[in-house]
Length: 82
Image (cartoon, rainbow, N blue to C red):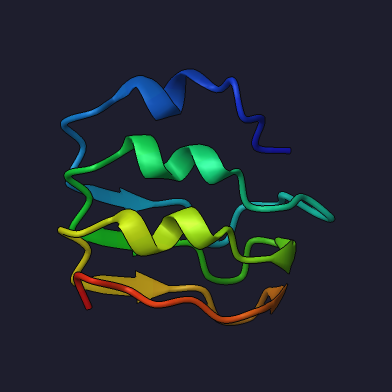
C-alpha cells in the first residue's frame, strides 16, 4: 500500500518517478502526488491501483508523460501540462 503520509511525497524536487510493476494491490492513488510539483514523468502502470484518479493530478503542470495503464482506475480529469 502506498500511504498518503509516505516520505516519498516530501521529495518536492523529484522530476521522474517510476513505481510501475509494484504490488500496491487494492490501493487507491493518493492525492498527495500533487506535492511533487516538478514531476515531468510519472509511471504507475501495472501496480494494482484501483478507484478514482485524484483530480489533483491535473495540477501537475510540469507533467509531460503519464502511464496509468493496467490498473483498475476510473474517472477523467484535465491536465494543464499534457
